[in-house]
Length: 256
Ligand SMILES: Nc1ncnc2c1ncn2[C@@H]1O[C@H](COP(=O)(O)OP(=O)(O)OP(=O)(O)O)[C@@H](O)[C@H]1O
Ligand SMILES: [Mg+2]
Image (cartoon, rainbow, N blue to C red):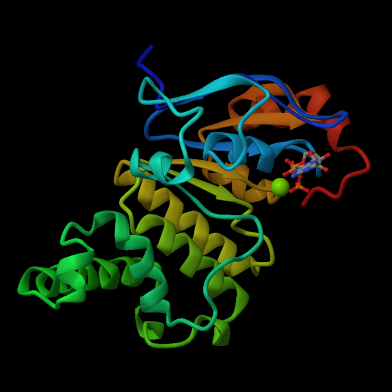
């Protein structure tokens, strides 16, 4: 089997007496859309936070391209090619769509602060280049016509797409999305599925936390299920869906 892109190894995270993650291990293959699902409070966001340097795990390690991420600061992990979105929307609502995504491009910029402050030709060229890349990203997400709109004026679904596009602006190898379809209409969810599938076609790997099971079943290659901080199932979407432990974990939960 080929070397996985991301490897989660015996990850544990305790918050006082709460075991948010216990001994969770799994791998994400390069080029897959890999889902991380489970009932509310299962530990999904905590796993993202441990993998992206927001929390340090109580035990265990996270590896990306066979290099250890655990212990690195979030910006260093981002520079390795891991981008993420947050569960709660965080686009800068008082900035335009274009500005929001340009901020995400900062990892691509090389001209440096001094050249930028002095408006040297190298930094102007750089800015033009970043704007072109940004506009291409906005076109792909059907946001180009809103480039100059304030994000706060857009519908929720479009704001989510701005956040996703901002995460893509740094040209990541892996994109981690925390419930990107929350609050979206059916049509918007289908468009999101189409976008993620086409990004996978371009070689991007996606780790997706999602409650919308029809989205998970239609676009994901593999699924890991957490419940009370433990991995209870892993496999192809259809296998996992039929697993009695998964069905039991979701009993009493509203599954769409
Ligand atoms: N910063 C924190 N401090 C204390 N407890 C936390 C913290 N973050 C998460 N927890 C606890 O850890 C457990 C897992 O939470 P987490 O947010 O990872 O779940 P989740 O699977 O993302 O749930 P949801 O589907 O509701 O987003 C919960 O019991 C939660 O209360
Ligand atoms: Mg969560």
